[in-house]
Length: 280
Length: 284
Image (cartoon, rainbow over all chains, first blue to last red):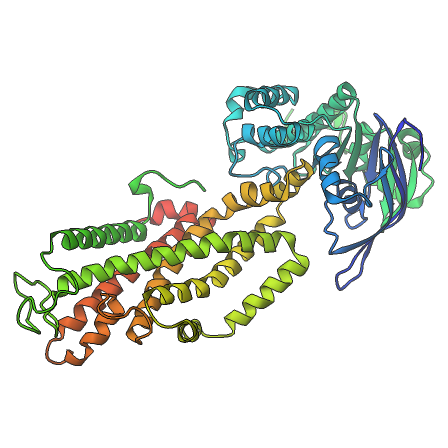
């Protein structure tokens, strides 16, 4: 166990095996350190174990269905050893989680305001009026236009990007020290993706929290992360600062991922074509 | 998936069933208030009297006013249906949701116990229960409740399981919500609409099952005017005074039909996939 105060999260030799018929080893002896205020990107294809890793940190794995070995130290406490009530408190106050599908991570029957107010009242013991005020500030913080109007709307009345902003606001409600974003932009279109990434970057800096950004898109991860971990088949293949991983990848797999970032074919004026054909 | 507040937003089946239920309830209440006879008052006129103005449904073999008996029977059926529905939902909701949410040993234990109960035909189970605790109106009610609690729990467990794995439940979990809060503030409201349909179905089935028990002689004891009991008492006269059998039987069918229509209509109405079609086909 490290006494380093700079260190927020340390994953030691973590293995996770699903106990179903397949007995799949989802995470295979993973070691990872996250410093305070640092953004880590975890990249990998589907089935590489990156989401399972995120779930494990947030304690969302059903202990009846998985075998977990190793340890996850959060502020020098092993999350895998402490009792569930204490974990629930840590989760409620220090770890935030953003899911891939914003639409399904909001309760369809609660107004946007209530989605934010309820955890504030339950965890921080805020009074309703205070919680309402904080919730409105949060909506403003994630740059939702007309926060007062959105406050009383239901999730289905908002666009995908708006919903993801609400989910981010909900995750930030208790000013967490660690924010885990599990493919937060995958369900969004490209322009909204860029907005959400910028928003997360700004929030990370202004709130000085650590960020675990999970994505299959190494291009997006490189915009937000300080360090990148490349995962495949449950193992971390390569880990290092963004610049190093992007410019001098040591693994063939990383090179392959980089080569697969889509590039626009036509970029200069001379090669653009009119949709209707070229009539000069 | 909001409940519409407008009458015209409901589909035909719901509208018809509401009219039927209101009709039968109002008639029953008015008749039992205005009736000069009590349901167990014998010899108010000639026995087996055919329907007349003074006795619209005639008199039975003891000379009891049949209108009073049938309307009170209908109200009694309502009471039974409502009680069985309420108790089985009140007990079934915590069992079902907790077993879905906790999983593991609790869920397995409960499910296997429910499987055991399902292995017996429900009416047979009720007969056994009544045989053990003794027959009577209240024991029949108790037996029906015991039968419908596992059915409700199983249904609610299934509905809760499909909600349990949704992201907003995990999100609530990460946001530090307690198990109680997740179960009753997040999962329960989201399955409430299916519970409405379940409740209506239990209501109808409980009425039928009670009538069957009374008919078999293990439910309400004479002179309680349960519809099933009225049918047994009068079946001997079916050839000579058929109205004594037909009218209570029709009342029972009317009641159950209305409730089944309501359940059916609600199911279609609350099915989110049908929302689009419903606006076009609401009058079919």
